[in-house]
Image 1 (cartoon, rainbow, N blue to C red):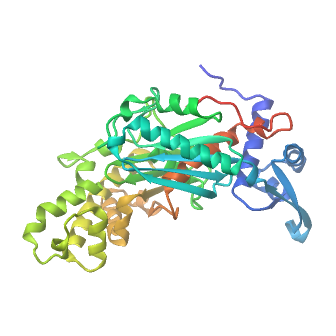
Image 2: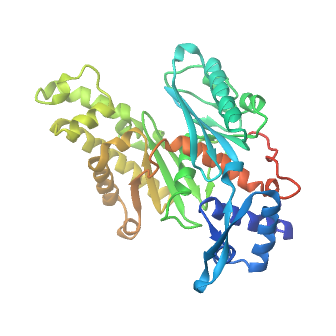
Image 3: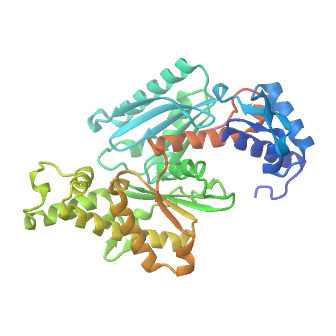
Length: 401
């Protein structure tokens, strides 16, 4: 059993972590502002900031207008000194990016995948691209990796990768841990996305619950409570695609593949649909025709949105979130899809629950999962606050998760 009490060193580390997280999310703050946000005494803030100044983690930026109009010295985190590499592995592509500690993307590499190449060869290419970015930017504290589920955390491997055999035989943690000097942190993609959204949501409080619904060819969910990812015993917490609704599982009714199957099954009865001109139908194609005014496409999107809303209602009753954030392919359904989701969920929830629930699409303009992988690495680095002290300013030593 781990320790349940906290000594003075634990409290000190917690205080340092709080300050680092606040600074990582802002441009410049004064000591007085940090004191108000954390509730810590200004003397405590001053001692911690002095340590950070000595290690080069932060710098002073000159006088700012502070509390009650007083002039105060601004403090900024030296984001350029603490970069992380983020890796997103998907079924048909991978992305590698380098981010600073403020989760700002500096550069990104994207490659489509050929299953015939084999999982081991793909992993070698990923490592090569990541090393190239590290060499170019000259600073990297950690590597964050987002992988599709089911991800068996205790075994360090993906249980199954649809349409891409071979990944289930690879211990990703072990191989990437051996490939990099930096600590490697591997996370389920939906969980990584949830953490990425948590760090950006202005609506989420410190103790709130956020659920990220990753809706693509499959359906997965990531849950963050109080800023912490909930993973479960094996790591498959949030594999809601297998949740039963009607006479099948959620993925049978509201994934991108389900939408395409539904459209293709009914298309012969709708020769008036503009979709009949398409040689290959995908979810993206359906959304494009819907936006161009095709009634059949719209009706299919509404049906899929209704099913997804039923799943959302189940999520609300299980996790009691303040926010549910939907990302990936199915967010291409726009307001038509979102309205159907909201209406179906509202019908199935108590009015008191619905009243202050937010259901929205991801606010991250680019690749949420890649940003989420960076968030995982940054979060782990910030937790190792001894790395930001005068005696330990190098990257923290850690084993891959």
